[in-house]
Image (spheres, rainbow, N blue to C red):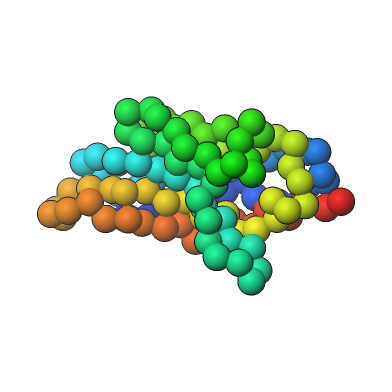
Length: 121
């Protein structure tokens, strides 16, 4: 089962919080980096937050100070804590991970199926 599965999306009022989770499954040798991207209708998919294997993080300016990404290297999971949500955060959020699976020869970027986050005014 070489896949990423996201959970935690939903409908929330402005100012509220959500926690997104991403779990990688399968026989994993290593995960280089994990990140969260989002895509709003009519917009390009954009980076929200990314965390490298060494723990360094990168955030979009629009979410800096409000969102926090974390990961558990043992469980092969990544979380995105989203606080003080705004209507402009409304989008489909996708988990991304650069994964070396057992039996493969290279790292490959995998995408989750996406989870909808809707923030009402």
